[in-house]
Image 1 (cartoon, rainbow, N blue to C red):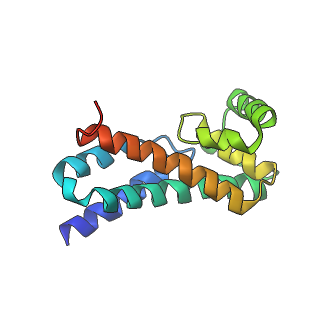
Image 2 (cartoon, one colour; image 1 turned 135 degrees about the vertical axis):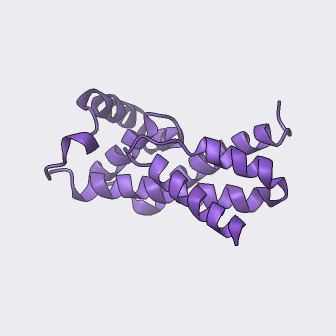
Length: 145
């Protein structure tokens, strides 16, 4: 029961961390791996799915709410948006492989604005997010480093 609640908390943390809301999920992810290293793959899957779905919220915001008025605290700074658009225009959908980086949240919004096919968006973002958690998990559990 406790592990299930912890997984739910990890899912929420990973989900929120992928949106423009400033939050980090890596500490929770790492802490769970330290506490339950035998459940590596479950923890990895939950964090990856939560983070990918959070990025899907960004995509939806970019796709459907681009013209709507958004409260100031939830707006992406114009300079960050311009940098992300420049990356996206230069590198195309492949820039979504950087969605795990700090600027990555903005890239996922730009992907929505530019109407990237959903299947391609989800595939690239899931690969990037899972890859990041996999490397972090291997470092935390001592398989790398």
